[in-house]
Image (cartoon, rainbow, N blue to C red):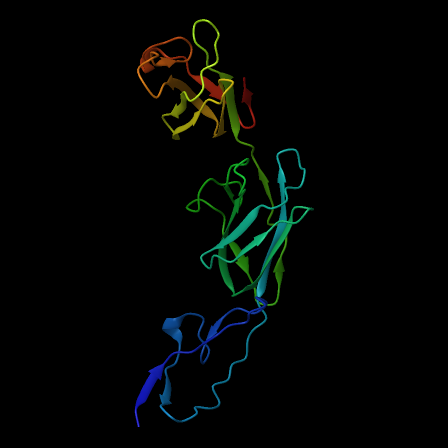
Length: 232
């Protein structure tokens, strides 16, 4: 008879109850080993699941209008929910403890945010969760990214397609797009701060140029962006 030692995890697929390791462990390291002999049935490996806690709130834009489809995630368990048409979400089945909450727009129109209006998990406010209770009011108002748009032409005003347009920031790095058939471009996902715009081609037919009419980055005119700004 061969004997195996295993740890067993009890999981509620509905998500209403926190996971538990036998016999009463929250983490695998706290679990008891179960002796299993091949060819025999090990009985009485029972568990009583505790009613989980929950975190709930609303997500809006800066004007207070509800945002649908925003992903809400709690750290460190990474359980998630998505806001409904009213901007409401609820994450259930949480074990007692402290959590940090992250809000992310999957469409990339709004900047991610940690509760309470923080830009990283390091400085996020922890939320205390109690078993069997819902912590309401964990809300967020997301800031819309800024955009820069324009058109690239040659000296005769002929639209240039396929040109590279790059916006760079000392704080946030850079983002890039290419011009369409009409020479138009749109740079999105920009955070507040100063950005410089560089236009360059896929070949050597045209000289590189920094906005506004400069050939070197050092003399380029920075564009100051704020949340939701649209520079055309």
